[in-house]
Length: 314
Image 1: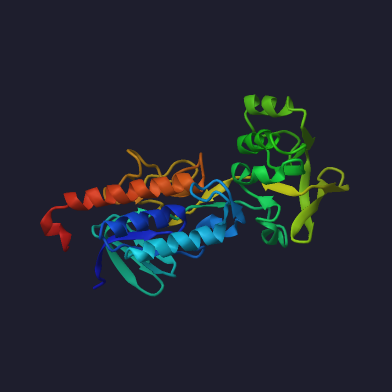
Image 2: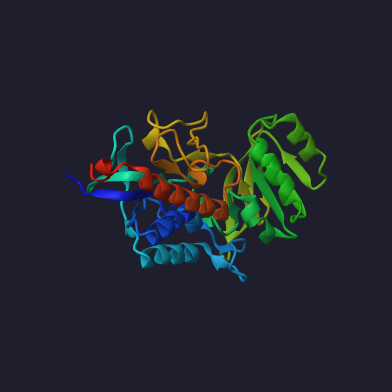
């Protein structure tokens, strides 16, 4: 039978590694299963200037390396594996990977959410070098530049308006002839003189030189005409997909697939906690993910203290 763990953490972004740090310091000997995209979305980020304590900024992968090492320093065990199934309907919870099976008294879910990209050839090579999925994170780097926002929903309008604080021009590109955003968000965006519009249009290619984006090719869906648009930044705002497929039918999810939490990180099952982007579709910041990881760890510790002694070794 698989050994029984106090805490198993699935995911190794800012939320998962902060949860690992706190539970390790509480002498709970957490096991972190890192997942396919170890380190989370910050592994695709270049300079991070808005994480407290790094006045000069820090590269995203370097920040995650430091967080990982800090968690290990205090006794967290990290394994490079991918969870295939989870059973939270029995206690202890059962977590399986392709190599092993683990049982856990508490489970912290920090599997994050994956930003939807355009699916263009070579698109990922420009992530962090002009292609971004987070205006709040990266907008500052485009001060005085001309950039594009792809999308037609509320998030795209919010990002376009926000980016006008920095960019000289923001071109919104959307496949349809009308926007999906709410009227109030459309009105706000259309009233902004820095925002230009390319509706019924799709990005066909992203061009770059010397390690940075220089332009995009945009196709008019109605006429087929191609336009070369000189921009240094492309903000893709077509949504995120929470990584919750393991928990469908077991945990309470919202209409978009995010884990529903209450009283902080608590889920619909006692002893199961969720933190970071897997349950947060509003802020999606490294610092808020880390904060929720801290809360999940503290609540997991309190839950373990409340388990009757006869269940501690079940």
